[in-house]
Image (cartoon, rainbow, N blue to C red; front, side):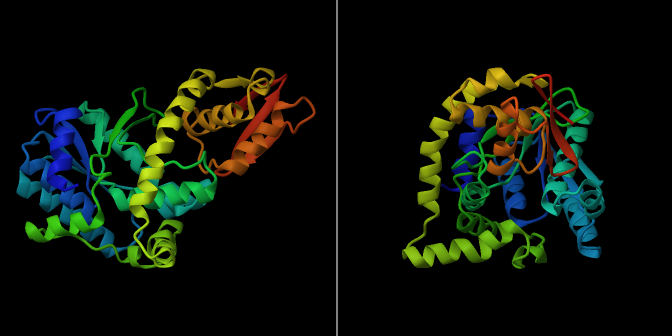
Length: 318
């Protein structure tokens, strides 16, 4: 799918051009292409939002300056924030990726409150989706899952959830490159994207190319198709799990009576979405599931200095 068609579909089904929305812009090619395509198609009530993660010194400051100038050229308001992500990761006992994601959510929630606009548009595309599917699969986080085109995320300290919109999930990186070349758009290159350090970079730079070579074809469309099939089944399971996991606490005996598949889904949803705990995968879910039996562990340690405790048959998150 072309970016133009993706934005046209987005405008018709999800968010009309006249509607105000926030756009997260890192300064990289994907977010620059998205911002340009939205603005070119008539979305003029945009607020450009950029968070400086303070990880790359002058380069990070240069990204922020670039986005500020880009917004000015388009005549759009801009929000520039900063976060000491490395320090936050160390303090919270989480990875840089997790700390960065948490900082971005906080920043976007603050922007949403200031501008009275809960809709946030992100530039994740089809290649990101394929990487996410593999990342979730190998981490064991609730099966063959990718990103949804429309999700809601409640940030700690804020009463209203962010509505996260991803209009480019059917757009390939090759299509993004075509669009950037066609419109002669400048962007900022993050040098860390070319280094196979972080887990996602390893997937992008090493694992996915190796799988494509081994199979003799581009497997990304196949991953997206498999995810689409799994997503329908996933939505059904989530519809069953959500009413059972929306409370602050869980009754261990009641959850224990459910089929194992639904037990796992309820616990995953409760920890990941109700309490927004980081790093929740299969092992974490199984550790907490062991607490459902009366003689099971009374507490489980999770990443980020979080705990799940059982008191008088009731699970609570701390």
